[in-house]
Length: 266
Length: 266
Image (cartoon, rainbow over all chains, first blue to last red; front, top):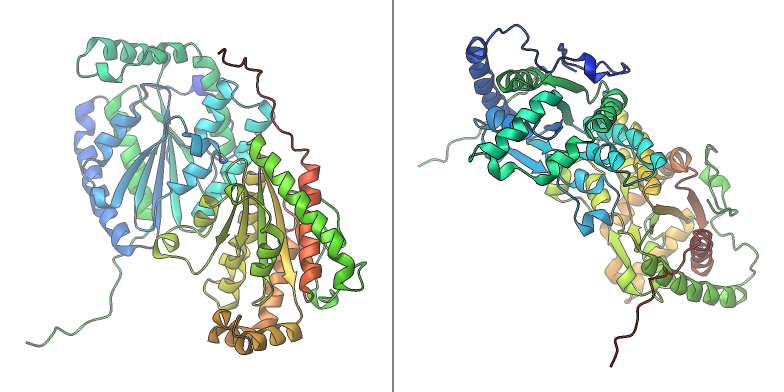
């Protein structure tokens, strides 16, 4: 578990309104972070190669956020330099009928990374204690026991060789409004607009409460949550990239040494 | 959890040598059980139809045994009358390279029953605390923590609508020798013989110890183990069938009532 000002310490109760979404850490301006961010991206690409070559362990990165929180943008900015042969993104949308016929972790488990791989979950198992709770799709006793399932599931994965990092991209309610408006106005962003976004925005407080419980109950030493200030996209990318790189450095990845082979004689 | 003289009460330590493998319960002879066994098989077929129609819950049956313990025979005898559209058997053999690239529950979770279905596991997640332990394929600390994973995994499944029944078909060491010899001598059984069977038999005691730990650590109120006396095949089938039927009766399965529809007018 890599330390950071944004780590949710296991056992500590999260209160989102107290956490500034517009924090920029040691940086005053985007340009100050520029050099550092470039280094992070280069380093991540190197580390991913060793993870892939080692073929023993894997990395699972979970991104959750309110609508417009920047999951897609984070993936694009942090991972664009990484070899896609060793890195895949899985977006969890509304479950299919086959998925609904199984427990809610069934489709999640199927999508977990193979040894050597980085897998990024755009939404995740946490939707089952977020949208399903907020929209009352399941009774209270059902979603309440899911925190234990999820913690046990993540323990299994980490015990068996997967490192897990979970990022909540934390935006303010004002920033969301700005971004929703931009989706309507900007022709490059309009394709992402969805009439449902404004409806979901009316449940802002219920979602924030559901997030607080998920972050509080499921930040563990084996699979920690980080709450990333995400009003400034450049800082959000910096924080996510920095935590991933430091976590991978901590894994002490090594190129495997294969037994020496004689060259085939002419 | 359906009671039975063969139930492993959660928390109770299992000592296999004390448990007779040639028990035949209230029956003196195969013919005494005949009527009762026929009724069980007919009842099972009825119950399966309602489970399938209800489409809300599922049943997972796990069969484990020493070699020649009778997993295949149990499936053949108990389930032959059941509609295969609502019942499937999954046999877990040596894992593929894709399966080995994931945690040991990955392939198990994929194979769990959809709502409405009965799935029978011929071998299961328990191989990861049996063969992998006996042949030292993983270090001690790795297989030791797997009991917790397995219990949590089975809790998830039951919480989300799957009823789990686990049967250990318990045969004596002498009975195994007889059956291995029969495989060599009987032309109808010869196809099942495997030179590896005699090698595995040398690890009899280590396997029995590994089974004792699995049965002790993983018989829970949500997913109980039953130790079925299996030296007599007819009694083994009777016990397994009886527990399945009583469990399904306890589920209070009901045909769903669909809203009345008017007949299409001529």
